[in-house]
Image 1 (cartoon, one colour):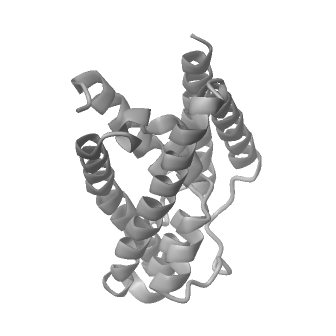
Image 2 (image 1 turned 120 degrees about the vertical axis):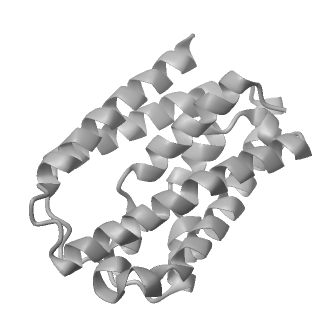
Length: 199
């Protein structure tokens, strides 16, 4: 079972990564923008299913590979930190409003596939989730339950964000400043991952 400190770190990591704009969140916001919050709710289940499958597969692979390649977890943490740093810089430079031409979602199946292939799943499996979550059934159930409890409201928030943009309720919001603030949070998170990998 995870300790309270491990649980707190897991919850913080999950929250930060799920809040970060990416392909899945863009599809959720675009769905809210185009069809409203209520009609977009089934997409949350598709996102959860995609992440659970992908994280589980990556996690089991990493745990088994680490037995013959003991340096693999540290390398994955450093690579994840560099990837998040890249996302932070890219988000800062490309901060724009959510376009009306955002990718059109074709429903739960399209969102499931997009989430299944989302690089965040590897980040969760290799860095955010502790390895014990893929070795012990109770720890796995606990970690996945925590993940689901955090994913549902965050996904709903992304859908509502898109719906609010579509209804014109967020005219006061400056998407550029919001994305740049998020890029700073991402940058700090990437530094913490690098620090954890090197110590």
